[in-house]
Length: 315
Image (cartoon, rainbow, N blue to C red; front, side, top):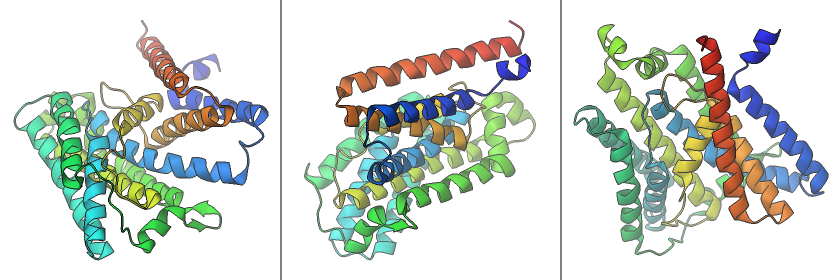
């Protein structure tokens, strides 16, 4: 029994921390368990989790994508401009997703074919794509979003926010892909040992292309959903989402060294940070303290994970 406790996955501890945080906030604030606040939490965590799901694919490969926030901002602005210009919603959606795919493919090819570290490639993208969003919009918000688009973020099915339902569908599809398909197994294999993966015939270029393309497509999806929620395109939307996505993956049990991470863990990590932010607002806590707490949590979770790994290998 002691051994089982010792080897519980990190996401189990984080899930417990989420429950403890909920219980504490229920005592400290009479507004936490209100239906309006719970609905707000579900809407907030949905977009953050979708972006984190995409980030997970690159981290499983022992890579990283620092550009997801800027990609969300750029594709969101492009989506809003197309809609305000009268383009049909379906066409604008497909083009925004295509833009995300092209960006992700470019990141993958620069990493795999040119040998540029993913940190550098996507850090450049973080700056460049945000700049493009500001240039396209002239630094202004884009109005004229059709009502059907705005209604997506505010709609509910049986009192469950539509955003949360979309996130669950994307999450389930991603989980199935990672756990039950050859592509998912190849991602974990490459992240665990890229040279061994090459020796057994895995096409690293194709898998890398898929991971980074999915990351940017998911970021584009998040950008469009932000447009829906705000009912406008904002060039600074999703600023900082890259750090939130990486934090959700790491706190949820993913490893920056690759080969490990789950969709459920990402969701739990995103839910923890969303809950902390929500609780800070309800209690009137300085938002700077929220940043401190989140940073400490990341350090603690990584420390616990390292202890578990050392125990598993007998150090």
